[in-house]
Length: 85
Image (cartoon, rainbow, N blue to C red):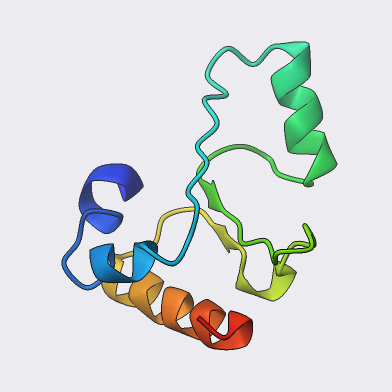
């Protein structure tokens, strides 16, 4: 749902150009994928996380679970403001 309905939404698409989007497929639930979930203290998908240029996560803007396009557009605007984009 997030990939098709949120990331492709007209209010979200123009803002995504300021970001590098990385997607992880964790459907196999193997040891490497579980380690990644553990590293970021995630129970599973979906999760949208933002990182500053220095690699530190912007934890207050983390999105866990489903979100609609309008709310995600607001998150993106807030993150862009914090990053000066």
